[in-house]
Amino acid sequence: MLRVEGEMYLEDALLLEKIAAEIHADLGSRIVFDLAELDLLDSESAAVLRRLSNTSGYEIIGMEIFVQSAVNEAEGRSR
Image (cartoon, rainbow, N blue to C red; front, side, top):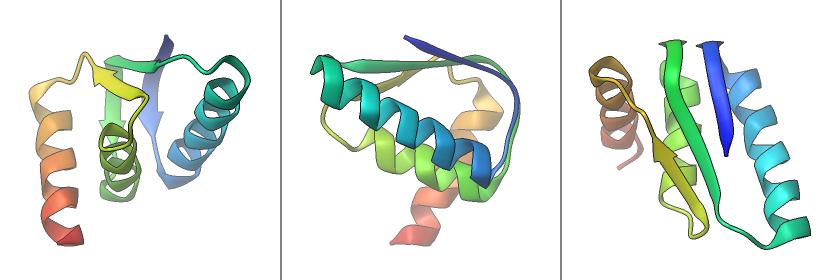
């Protein structure tokens, strides 16, 4: 499980994606992102999280209402 705290911007989300991909490749296990302590999420990083949540082997938990809204908004823009 990868716990994310504080603020997340695009650079952070891309780094998280890279780290998760390396762990997933090395261990072959499901990667869970716990976002319960995330305070700020910009729309670009929300798009990265949305992409991850739609990828097999990744799961996002602990999303507060505002985070879920940001992810949903990013999904709407990507359609």
